[in-house]
Image 1 (tube, rainbow, N blue to C red):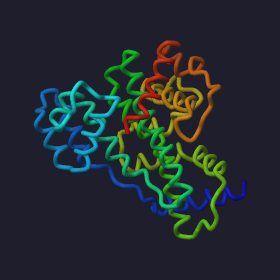
Image 2: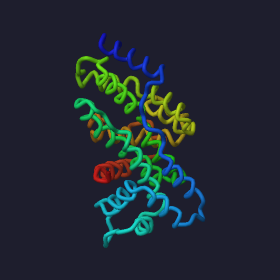
Image 3: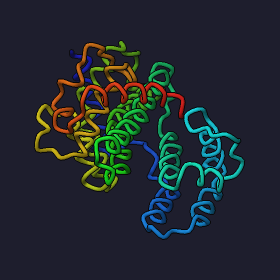
Length: 279
């Protein structure tokens, strides 16, 4: 416990001093979101924005040709990808592509954790969006996706800070995995919320980051319940750092609040397992 407390002190000192190195929001994603909010947007605008970034073009084409989205014939151009998947889905892929760049670490111990953090973020995003569509909240699909992707940004922040401490020599020894997970579980909502506010994210996303582990979500609103239920589904399946196969999704307050019945929850689990191949 002494190790955990002293490390948390170091982490909080770094945060207070503003020594947190996370990439800024990607401007290409912001442009795509701005263009596609207009129902009469021009497809050429979307194609042009994506085509201006080589890495994003490559990623969109790769995912559009993957098994999860695959069609009858190969997709060879960004325009074909937009036609196949639709502009909203292309924007979501662009967000995934740009956010993935933040999931990095230099020390072997923490670098080994990054894939699980990323898989969890993507699965929670896709799960929350899927639930929104399935349960009659289609107007929240995009917000659910973004909220799911960002809900554990505090976990990434803590990993990046611990990584910096290790590289700088301020953390001289490797920590037991259980201590790392406990630190992340304990501090990710509070510090994630502070980071989201610092980034000036819309308040709805800041609240998702802060409140998705609250015990009582009855008054929290639909968006947080969608993300919290997707998050628990990931934990049940072991998608991420935590795994609890005994977790009963049908007994959660989120499932009751959203009206998610057993069949929907079973379909959610299948979708999440299939979606592991998307990115």
